[in-house]
Amino acid sequence: MASVVYNIAKSGWMNGTIDMDTDDIRARLCSTGTTADTAIDEDTVATITMDESDDTSYAAQALAGESVVTDDTDDQAEFQSTSPIVFTLAGDGTTDYQGMLIVKYVDGGNGDIPLFFNEFTGQPIAKEVTSLSVTMPSAGWCKIA
Image (tube, rainbow, N blue to C red; front, side):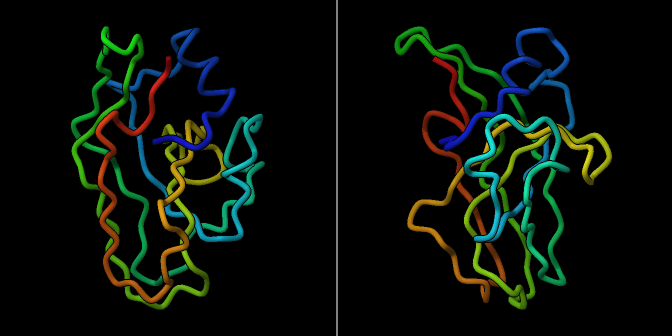
């Protein structure tokens, strides 16, 4: 479940500039030096210390099957996608992994819009992993109550 939901995402959901069903949403793997877990008021990834994986096989992963589900029982909306998200790695990163930054893809770089950060349970995950499979929590990747 999301540890941080960025203010720019909340505004984008309210004014319609971010559509979780149709926009290109991607997961970026962050290492332990990131500020993605605390930088709630940042508008682009340019202003976040990403500390994105430097593993030679790493690539940000596009989410598939995105949907927004209304949960009337718990009075919330949940963002879901096909699970798990799998990062294929070479095991040669220089720092351990702390979590995933979920972004609205703009340019694949500093212009991407940060939506929310999911910190790994039991983190950090060792930098030597060669495959990292992240399973969506039962209430989705992010919920708004």
